Length: 471
Image (tube, rainbow, N blue to C red; front, side):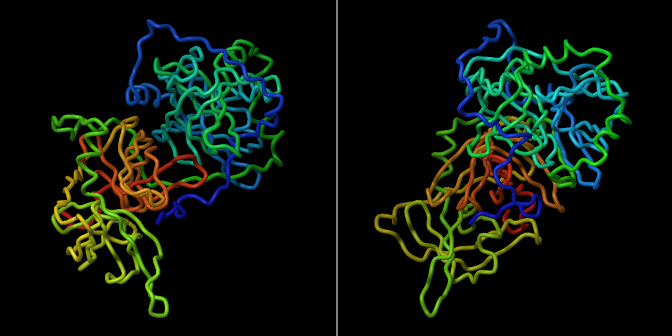
């Protein structure tokens, strides 16, 4: 069972960030790349986020009908904010906010080029945390993006260079496999040296993670070519766009979000574990939960989810996996196939989506008599850092006992009183009720949601939201 994020975001089909590249046929694929300097200092994902996030902004557009679109951008000078031209198109009002919520006063539009899909905004307040342009790395190099897909501010994501030079309609792009979504356009693409190598601008809606960014050399050409005559007053720009209409993409989706580096506070000197060690030590605690319905006297399987042993007879799962189901219609199977019956269901407060099942062994599977399930440790205090690797353990699409790895996008996001971790460790239907593990192999969250309209945007409820009885 997989609960979607309907409470946050409307169901969106494949998304075009700004426009669709119309010409697969006339796209010249050229394997050209400029290698970054070997002597340049490199940073890990969390360090890149910490250095880059203060320069990134939310650009909020309001059209003539009061509809709101959220786009992305970043400072390229103390007063200058770069974004896509399409982000500010049809704007009757443009607002600029840091991802920490600070509002900047927009003074003018320094320049705009619709063909390059770039625009430079000038603000009144100074931000010393601006980003520098770099060179496009070779194919296969890791890169990162910070943006605001479907209005979820300050989302951090990771991918790699898929093609260093992709020419479409005489425009030069770098192709990426970074997960995307409407609203990330205008955000920076950053290499391991902390330099901007591109500006996110469009996606191919018929593909998965085929996204394009304006190359850094094109951005430099745009910035260097701006002249005083290119400046546009806000009054003039708003007058030109006074009848414009946009496609809204979400706003005020979260009550609060935490972007700061926090994990070391609760690391307690534990030793980080390798992925294979985490799997070996945790998979014995994973269970498959199957829910049945009674139709005319026959039991019919309605769906399945995941759960993990957190005690000898206690299993943590997502409430929606077992919600509104009689306990006698729930079957739990461990890794050896042994069957457990549910004796009690203890759920957290409404909306927090964590339950504990109290179970009793009912029947051994063939050869399962010698199996002893493991028990996982819960850490209610742990908040991962942006860019930190986490692991999702569950049964996606009935591919039982699966471990996936991905990067933390947002370490703590609060919605309607519940706290969540947003991450890139892939999950899907059947993963719900599985657990999110930190780099020490501890449970820090329970898998429960996906945001539709954003590629690989997974949500897990932090275990602090669970019922007291699970401890």
